[in-house]
Image 1 (cartoon, rainbow, N blue to C red):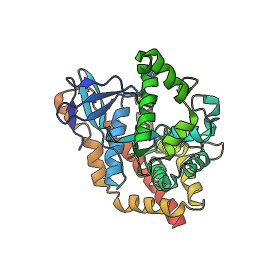
Image 2: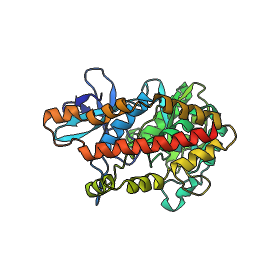
Image 3: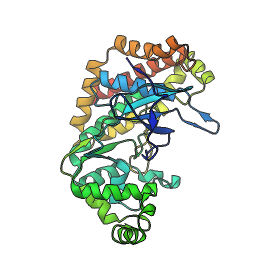
Image 4: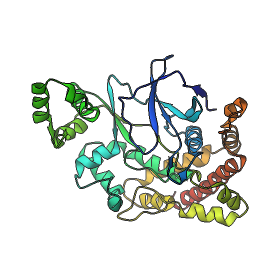
Length: 355
């Protein structure tokens, strides 16, 4: 069951940057001295996905029940703000979290995730080729397992910053990382002029770390591991308005349509396809069938509806006991369970066809 953290007195570590599109801040836990990431639900303009952080927590607990290597998310309160919180995945002194986008951009400098017109560049072949070029092909197993997990929960946002590889640093990569961070934070501008001038001349071009140094930083570490699955909150219909949720619950066909229309963020070629189609494409591709079937088999064998139901129905128990209004409505819990069941059945069909 998700724990409840009151982080009102924790100190924000404002000099740390985080990837992604959510309002995410880093705090130091005074009890264990570790860094924790506090994330609120997505809110921008008319889009207010206020229940999104509950999807993150449910995805985490369901994933762990089904044997996935997934980051633990818990409930956190800071003043009157409620969100989810996770402990840092790395040892800050000796490890470096490299988001997938770093590998993709270092491999293909034409890849520009900021350009929305070019989002179809983000496809499985690009990921495959980039990881192979940096001798990280061994991590494709975990990436494919992540894709299968996304098919189960309906996650629509597995973009290039929502998967990563953890590197054990060498002295060289530590140096590059420190210079890159000083550029990002503006700390380099506080250095003596001569020292700053030398650093920029040797290590940077256009205000950024030289591409060849970035490549070396990604290539050199021999000890690496795939990061636990994280940032899975764009799932379980978290974007649906309350009226839509109620309508879907009274119309089973609407839930079926919603499941069928859900698209994976990772493209196949230049096309964005649904999660099940992406799973099938990988099953039919050389080298991935075994990984997919193993993941599907484990999901099917370990999916215990009673345990899943307890996770979903009790996820907000501690918040309700506090009398806080940021609980997850009963109707949304019901929808989560229906979506999970339908998606499981679809994955079971795929497994039966390809095993």
